[in-house]
Structures are given as C-alpha cells and as structure tokens.
Image 1 (spheres, helix red, strand yellow):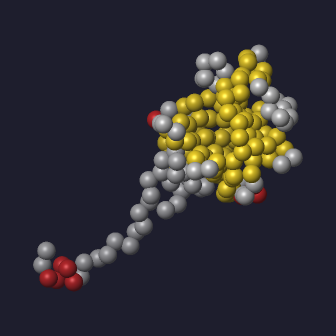
Image 2 (cartoon, helix red, strand yellow; image 1 turned 30 degrees about the horizontal axis):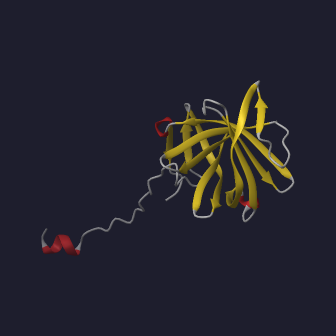
Amino acid sequence: MGLFSKLFQKKDTRSRVNERTPLSIEVGDIVVYDLTDYEVVGKITYRQGSYEWFGYQLLEGKNTIWLSAEMDEALEIGIYQKINLPISRPFPKQLTYQDKLYYLDEEGEARVVGEGRSKNINGIIAPYAEYCDETEEHFISVESWESDMEVSYGYPIEEYEIKIIAGSY
C-alpha cells in the first residue's frame, strides 16, 4: 500500500452485527421456526445461583410461542405454548395432560430479568416446576408469577430447526 493509499483510506463506519445464538437472542430479532417468521417481543433471563437460562416470547400475528434455551452439559432448546391446566402450590408430584402422565423433574425459585413485553416481571423471584413424560419427549413448565400461575406445554427441538436474524447490532 502506498503512502497516499494510507492517508486517504476510507474508514468503514458500518457497525458489525453480532452473531446470534440461542443463548444471545435479543428483543427485536426474528426467529424462523417451522417455516414461520416470529418476532422476539419478550425475553426472560432466569437465574438460580450461578446458573442461567432464557425464555424468548415469539410473536407471529396473534400466535405466541416461547423458545427456551439453556446450556447444561449441552445446548438444550425447546418450544413451549401456554395451556390451560389448573395447578396450585405446592406443586404436585405428577400431572395429567391430554391423557398423558407427567412427573415432577425439577422445582425451585429463580430471580428473573424481563425485557420487552416481559419487563413488568423484572426483579421477581418466581417459583417454578418442570415436568416430563416417561420418554422425556414432552414437557410441562409451571411458573408462579405472584398471583398468576402460567402453565406451558413443550417439546425439545434441535438448533438447526431455527434460524435467528438479528434485528439490531
């Protein structure tokens, strides 16, 4: 490169888009799942001690689903949809949904950080319970949001089943 090339070199002022993974999705991103584009309208970060996992509220038209992501020994992601199943605390040891039995797999409390549509729950300590069927192919997630109990039905998916398009830098 000559002297004049160095002096008059144009600077690249474009911002770099940070690559998104299931653990770094942001509100405003687009997640493509099952040939449908969903906008990320809410994000919940759950923390229990030093362990952290994420829930992303995905919206397409009037259809809302949740994408969960956590790194345990390997990346685990799943799709959840809210269901109507009456549950009260203390959490029962088993549940029945659509004639299938689900067993309590884990329960605890997590401090949450909410963003986007989920910002109203920011700072809450939420009791939760996770249930799975015998094959561990279907799950029921229960979260207690003060006076409201939210129950969701879900199943695991593979990372290649989603595509993440950054909506911001």
